[in-house]
Length: 90
Image (tube, rainbow, N blue to C red; front, side):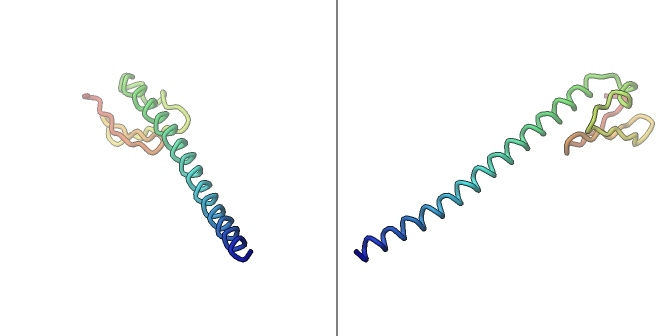
């Protein structure tokens, strides 16, 4: 009888540890998916801005995108954690 109680207690302890590991893994997967989605959106915005003429960049920024003039012929573009420089001559 004691052996059955010990085995049952071990089963409960292992199940509790496994459930905590599973919960942590699901949290990491959800975080990774959210990061991948935001990175994809930022890359899409960067590609959209890359296709526009240099002079139209300041008025073309969407929400979450910052376009800062660095010099007369250079802009710093920030979108979702991605940074790039855009020159008039490229």
